[in-house]
Length: 389
Ligand SMILES: O=P(O)(O)OC[C@@]1(O)O[C@H](CO)[C@@H](O)[C@@H]1O
Image (cartoon, rainbow, N blue to C red):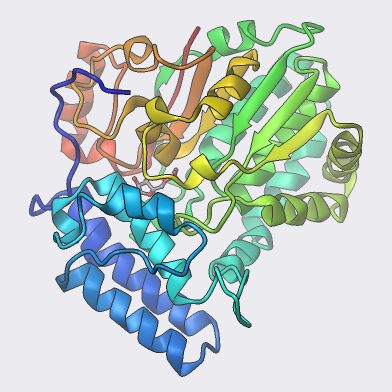
C-alpha cells in the first residue's frame, strides 16, 4: 500500500544511533552465542563466519536459490543486494539477518540441522529461572483478589513481560529497571472492546517466548475463563526470529511448564490445554509474521482474518514498529492516524526498546526528554498501552 509520508525511514548508518548498535554489536554477539551453544559442523561454522563478515563489513548478498522462501526474499531484497547492511531500512536488515542466520545453521534443510531452533537453549533457560517461578507462585495470591483487579494485574504482567526479550538482553538492556512506568494507558478502551459475556474473538499477536509468553497465556486464560473473550487466536512466528520470538513449540513448552507447576498456575495450564482441544484457543503462524514489512502491507488473507477479530492485541516492540511504521515519527503523531489502515480495532502492549513512538502528548514528550534525555525511547524501562477502534 503506497503511503504519502515524510517521516524518515530508520536506517542503521547514523553513528551513535540505536539501530547502528544493533547491527554493529548485537548481531555479532548473537552469532557468537549461537556458535557456542551447539556442536555445529565445520560447514555451519564457515557459514556463520561468512555471515558475520558480511553483516559487519560486507554487503548484502542475495538469498540462496535453493531455499523454500527464495522467491519472497528475492523480491524483498532486490533493491538492497550489493548495499551495505547499514544503508538499508533497519527493519529489513534485522529481518534478513535472522533469516540468513537460520540459513547458515541449516535450519531450512534438508539435512541433520533442519528445524533445530538455534535459540531454543536460551528460551528454555528463561522458563526455568527463579523469577519465572516466583511469577507463577504469585498467581495463588492474585486468585483471591477481586476479578477486575486480577484482570488489570494480568494485563500489566503481560505488558511488562515484554521486557523479557533475549535480543534486548544481549544488547545490555534493562530487564527490571526501577524507574518503570507507563507513558500511555488506554487499558479502559481495550477492556471496553472485550465486555463480559460479549462473545468476543481476541487476536493476540505474540512476541517473545518464555517469560513473556507465560504471562500472555495466563491473561488469555483469564479472559476465556471470565468470558471476556469467547475465542482467542494466538499468532506466533513460523520460524525462529529476533532470538526469543515465540513459535508453536514454545507455546507447547509453556503449557507443559504451567501444567507441571503448582496451585493456580497448574489450573491455568490445564484450562488452556483443554481450550486448545475445544478450539477456544487456536494457534496460528502466518508467514507474514516474519516478513520484513509493515502491517500496512499485510496480505489479503491475513487482513480478512484480523478483520474478523473484535480486537487485535499486538505484543512488543517489533510488532509496534511494524504496526505504526519503522520511521522517526514525531512522537505526537496520533496512534489512531498511524493505525487507520488496520482492518479492525487494534491495541499495542509494548515496552519502549527502539526509536519509534507515536501517540504521546506534547507535555509527556517534553518531560521525558528533560528527565531522561533521548535514551528513554530505547531503554526498555518505559511501557505503553495504546488502542484505537
Ligand atoms: O519485539 P520485542 O521483542 O519487544 O523487541 C525486539 C527488539 O529488542 O529488537 C530490536 C533490536 O534488535 C528492537 O527494536 C527491539 O527492542
